[in-house]
Structure formats: C-alpha cells, structure tokens
Image (cartoon, rainbow, N blue to C red; front, side, top):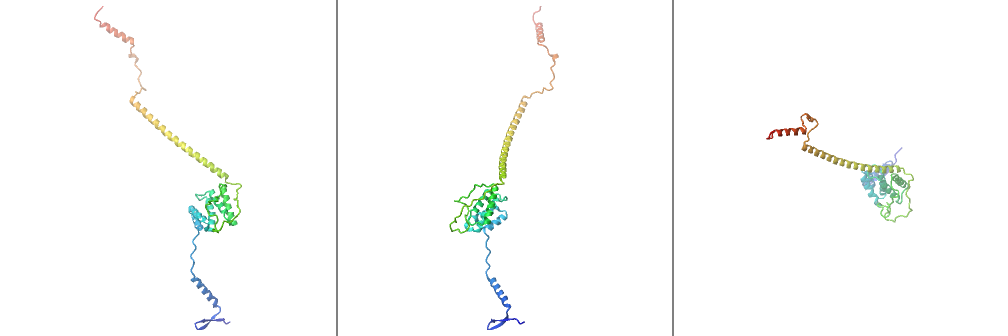
Amino acid sequence: MKCQLIRIPIGNRCNPVPLGIIPSLFLLLMAGCRHLEPVPPPAPPSLFDIGLAHMANGDFVGAELTFRDAASRCESGSAGRRSLLFLSFLALDPRNPAAHPDSAALMAARFLNLPGNSREETLEAEALYVAALDYGADPELGIDPVDPGFAVRFGDCDQPFPAREDRPLPVLESPTSGLLKSLDEERGTLTQENQQLRSTVRRLRTSSDSLQARVDALEAELERIRQLIQLPDTTFARPRDTARVRSPDMVLSGVLDIGMDRLPFGP
C-alpha cells in the first residue's frame, strides 16, 4: 500500500510529505508556542492559609492575630469568612491557653449572622455555637450591632446590606456541662479556702516564732539573775548539831556567875 503524500511548499518548490506526519508537526508547533509563553508566578498565600500554618505549628497567638486580620475586612472574601469560623475553633481548642467558650460562642454567632451562608457553613457554625454553650458559654451574650468588631459580610462590600429576617441562635436544651461548671465553681471555692488556711498557718507560725523569742529572752534573764544571786545548793546540807547549842537560860546564868566573881567587895 502506497503512503499518501501531500506537497508542502518550501522556497520556490513543493516537496512531498507523508500525510500522517502532519498531526505530529502540528503538536510540535503547539508545544513550542506554549513553551515560549511566560509562566505566571504562584499566587501568594492568603491570610487564611497563613493562619492555618500558624495553627498547625501550635502558634495559637499568631493564628488568632492572622484570622482576626482577615475577618475584620470585607475585602478578604472567602478567606475572611473561613477565618471568622476558625476563630471559633481556636476559642474551643483545649490546647490554646487563651481558649474561652464565650469567645467561641460569639465568633460562631457572628458567622451565623453573615449573609449568604451555605447550608454546610450554617451547620458548622451552629455546631460550634452549641458546643461553646455546652462548655459553659453564656447564652445571653449577643453581638453589638453598632460596633460588631468584625466584618458583617465578605462580598459586595460597596453595596447596601441585604435585608433578611433575623435568624435565632440555636438553643441547647440539656447541657452536659452543668456538672462540670458546678465542679469548677466548687474547685474555685476550695482553692480560696485553701489560700485562707495557708494565710492563717503563716500568721500562726509568725506568732509562734514571736512567743518562742519571748520565752528565750525570759530564760536568759532568769539565768542572769541566778548568776547574780549565786544561791547555794542546799540539796546535801548537813543537819544542825543540837548537842553544842546552849539554851538562852544557860548562857545568861554563866554571864551572871562571871560577873559575881569579879565584884570588888566580898561577903
């Protein structure tokens, strides 16, 4: 079978070229054109991606600052929306030293107040909100409509805010954290009592040291007085020799006898 040829003009003459080579030549030319086109630089990471990197590395402070920056501007778009939701995640993470259920509930409530939430996003925010309530968040907390502190939407920033019905926040009927909350309160009371007892023990120790110092001073003074008086030790004193002791009458009779012998006149 003969190969079909096609004549391609080259210079002033036409050379026959097999027909099957034409698609290959076309692909080579297209590949060359694409190779000559400039490659666009990679897009810089969004604030949401930067916040995720901080969170993955355990830098909760850096993650919160980045998410707050993104969630505070309407121009952040979808990154700002997700950042607001992840601020609620951060406030519920027990590894975060600054975690607090009230903050988690407020962030979730702000997200639920955004216009244009998808069903998936709404379910996520509601789950975060009731989880914060279960951890002890105050259900009476509300968003300040005058100064919400964060962007109230993340799209159509120059357009009027769309009118919509107020959507009530979900309610937790039977929170399981009631016992935990009471235990935390009891622990706080016990901690306060422990501190008071420690303070009492310190005062008693100080008073005991003061009394011991007074006792030591009195003993030293007593020893000094003993040295001055020099009291004899009468524990082994000999009893009096009563054989050599004369009565007063005998002494007076002797004196009178002696006096009569010395008188100058006789009988």
